[in-house]
Length: 281
Image 1 (tube, helix red, strand yellow):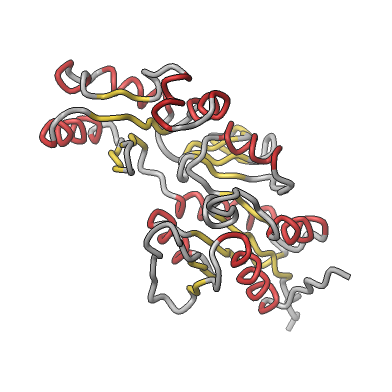
Image 2: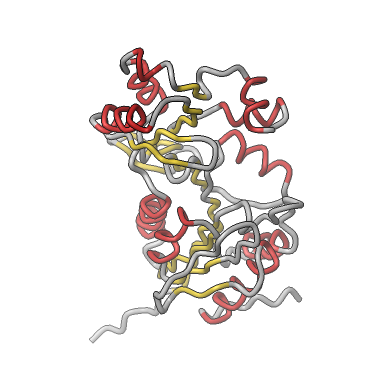
């Protein structure tokens, strides 16, 4: 009987950004950036940012922070980005995959709403860059990048709860869901971070048939929990700015510290446990 060769381990680390890989206050990735560079240089693991930010915001962040990555997920799982021709979609090699509903399709549904509902909405598409900046507190350049959307529409609402329920019913017929945030509401497709992670794992497994793919997921918010629990190893990051999420899953642990300091400790423990040599010498 032929002995099957032992598969090499290829971890893929899916990480939220704000409050997870990035410090809540300073927005620094130190000391996680050093570990990520080590993983990239030695091809030990792949790091995939998975964030509510737009692609324009993510690209700007990539310029600002020395964090190498080739695949990223934006707008809370709605769009996956990779190298040119990385994804096979409808017999065509593509650089992006829209998991949710395309932005123009969302805007088309908004424009089909009755005037009595539509008048209560003030979305990013309705606002100028300066108005988005005033509504969010972002600088002009940051507001411009936040306005460059591909699959979600944040909006302010001035109507009644009954009118909001009518809006939710109307867009639901087009497979668009209403999400309630802090100040803003959001219209999105039914995409999730968990679904985006699953898609990337499948693509990676096809490209690395000689490797065992291990999914590691880290996050600090309620919208990260399903992704964390669906990974092979999940890490909950403490959130000093809000309620820390919890899980009873045996493969989910909690990092000892919030932000990049806790990120490094948790990731090092997991990768060492998988038998990877992380010595920097």
